[in-house]
Image 1 (cartoon, helix red, strand yellow):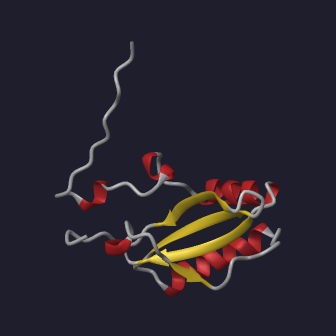
Image 2: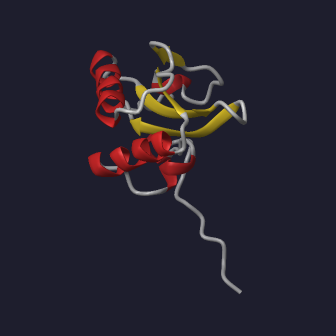
Length: 121
């Protein structure tokens, strides 16, 4: 029987906090983020970009960056919007979402840029 592996997380160490599924994996590089966007497009989901201050990352509501990109299939355009959001709000976490319009829910969501995390978060 295998043992359950714990992850190092501590309230006193803000940099160890986890945000959504992909935060338990090594940080996504540019090519891996591109692959995730390609997956969202291949599923026919509508991409969207959201952002928030690190201290509000666990709140239910994040700020939406423009409107969801309904029907957008250009991966470069989606990545450009995510980059624009990150450049406009460099101290915020930026999240990429794929909305599944058939299931009427989020098909995927991941933090692709992390803002600096302070001890007061």
